[in-house]
Image (cartoon, rainbow, N blue to C red):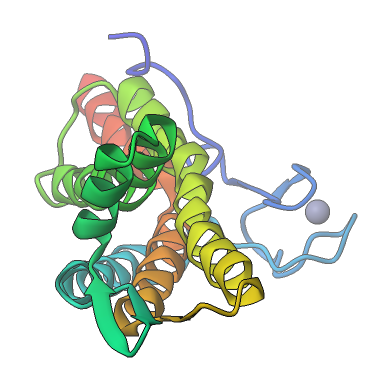
Length: 211
Ligand SMILES: [Zn+2]
């Protein structure tokens, strides 16, 4: 295994600065001597915080998909659309790229993020030794794809803005828009509070066993 023999900064009694990367001695360093950022060998309460935020995101994901994301009042008739109904509407009206974009941003990205981060947390609970390199890559993937969820908020805002300009219809964001925005924020905070360095700590066990 490639990562097995690697010494982590923590094992070398060092702590790295997350802001500027400088290494400091583990003992007696509370703040980075170069940039002043607080130093934590591992983010405090990382696992508990990430779980709490992931559970919040998963719970909010239900109203985000069940409740209407848009309310349209046109000629006295009110019509509401959930995210999925919106996707189907765009598909039927021939806007395939937009339908795909919304499907990716509102269904695929949040579910992928929640499931990757949960499995990373479960791997920590199980003291998994399975490829920390691959798991770190999976973690980076959640950070990279996370920003795409914001596309949805833009679509809702743009739709509201564009349709409001033509006065034939009244359109406003439904309760799901708020729930969805909170899902995006919760998953962003979850991937931020997860400390990928924890994935390498089990390798220490193996290292010590070898000695
Ligand atoms: Zn620093």
